[in-house]
Amino acid sequence: MDNKRLSRRNLFFIGTMLFGMFFGAGNLIFPVFLGQASGKNIVPAVLGFLISGVGLPLMAVAAIGMSKDDGVFGLASKVGRRFALAFTVILYMGIGPLFATPRLATISYEIGLDPFIPDKYQHLALAIFSVLFFGTAWLLARKPGRIMVYIGKILTPAFLVTLVLLLLFVVIFPMGGVHEAATAAYQHGALATGFTEGYMTMDALAGLAFGVVVVSAIRDLGVKKPAAIATDTLRAGIIAAVLMAVLYSVLAYMGLTSLGQFDRASNGGIIIAQIARYYFGTLGSILTAIIVILACLKTGVGLITAFGDMFKELFPQLNYQHLILVAAGVPLLLANVGLDHILLISEPFLYFLYPLAIVLIVLTLIAKSFGDAHLVYVVTVSVTAIPALLDGLNALPANLHVGVIKVLLNWGGYLPGFAQGLGWTIPAVLAFVISVIISRILPKQNAVIEK
Image (tube, rainbow, N blue to C red):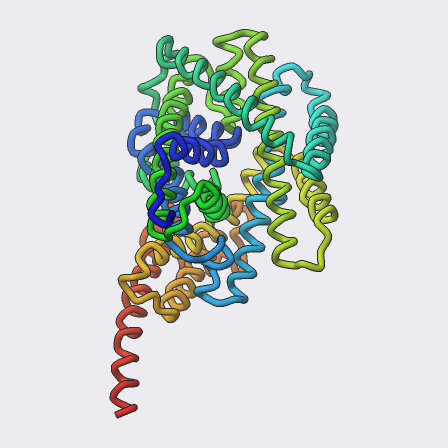
């Protein structure tokens, strides 16, 4: 039994399950928007996006599979328990009620209902839709078992069939616009901009949460040996990554070709609604609306349930039913600020948290190279946090770059890659190298003292 490996059928099932967990409706809007914004610089932009939007989630899942820790809390505990608690809470708040969950309602509204609602009723319609959306998600999250299986088996495949049909039309009957100029953000350093744009999918953060689900599923299928679990987790991750990479690339191309018919939009939700109506008319828009809303509802139930489960595990004294009420109530309020504003306020959070997550993931993957030394985790993560905070402040709206924040950002300007949100990379590498050297010197010094 210990030498058992997943069959090809089960491996494909786990891989597609992981893909379904990663690829919600929100993953549609960012590559489409990137394709429209990057213009003729789409190739390096998409490459950067794939590195962070596909490569990092794959690494996150692999890190959970390779480690002996049960989830993100165990992984972060290598830095310290207080850090692990804070990091886990912040991560689940971000991929839950603060950012990922509220945008489910706004994305599904903008893609599905916005085209049919007169401008003067938009705010009221969004408010009513949000109440219905999160009210339904909350009710289903109270006992999610049957409905999650039903939606997962029917609605997700239906969503993907509809999406593939739309993408086939885009490829066969392109709208034009492939030679359009890039926006200012993508005119120079399109690769780096695409990389940081991949943060917005939140999939690297979600990968830390989803990895334990994959490991549990593999164990349930009879694979018990840690090395086999790690290998099968990576193989399943590769299947999910390939599917995501293909879809992201074609979605970006769809955004690029849309410039042949439409002006640049403020977010990807608007672009997808325009394209669906262009190819399929009103009927197509209605079908797309139904599928996207239901797909978002599925994801919403999952996120609300995951939030309740994790916080119940961290704080056993809390009531699950109360937790999911918070997980549905907070997004209900935030959803009504609109998708553009949600994306705007989530950027600083992601620019700060992503570097910490990336460093944790990489350190876990290469732990054998430095003997899994506690010092290396502490020093590398602590040093990374400082420029990551500066990157987060730099992502704030320009009108907030005043006073102390302006002074800090001036200091951050001396860091290579700071303008692209990558000011943390060089300090992280230097901290890692120095801490590894120190960790190898200290044992020798202790041995000399003991003699």
